[in-house]
Image (cartoon, rainbow, N blue to C red; front, side, top):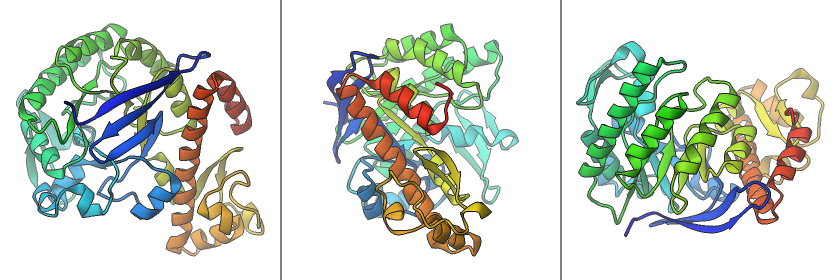
Length: 373
């Protein structure tokens, strides 16, 4: 039996979006879900206890970064990621493909794998599908990802086709190398760029490998939103209804809602933590740059409709002060707020699916947030 399984609960009559639950060896979480990113075994600025308080059911860590520091052998010696970082809920590790391929001139791709130089010290490394699985097995996450190539946008058709076919071959090698299927579930990653027929080809080839879950990669990489939605409209209906569907690298409120409408179960992104560290907050009325001078004497919370720790206890003026004087607490509070905002958003999305009104919710949220309806 697969380590990770999907339980379907309900479909929204208005949109077809689905409410579900993913079960893992470290517990279950409701879907659609947003996963905070803990790149180096830590969600920046947040403790595991605080992540639980904001409602995070699963977090993501990065294979590439943990391979370089502190090393997967050390994490394994510590008892795996869960014990190493004191997190007893589900964990997903990506394959490191996005990070490796974003190195540009510092890496070289062959059929065997990728040779690259560390962004830290320039040291030379080689990652093959088999090596990636070795690393992910050692890290011990509940959900692990196949090694794939995330191509840049735009990319020509010929290269995109060659890349997705190599990604399929690598996916098979990953599956052959992964043995501990009762402890960890390996997901395949659909590629194909912005070409509808190549997306269909990728899905068809991966379905033959019968993974317990499927991710959609290569989107939200610079293309217009309409192109991403078009690729989702083509891809998602082809994926198995009884398995989790994961849209990689997506974290803005509109992308999360549109993904859910199209049947996505899981998404992740560094966006809420990254913009939080820059003093930008997501609120029910749109983005708020709390470090701006106009908030110097604003003693209201970041968002009067938010129930997070920051909004319950501190004012915009105080948080702005902390950020201006470079006190760590300032960016901790903006990060805390942004992560809670997205957890609340997904909770509202799930309730809207249950109430058969997700499109109405979308339109109401868009109008209030400032998106074009």
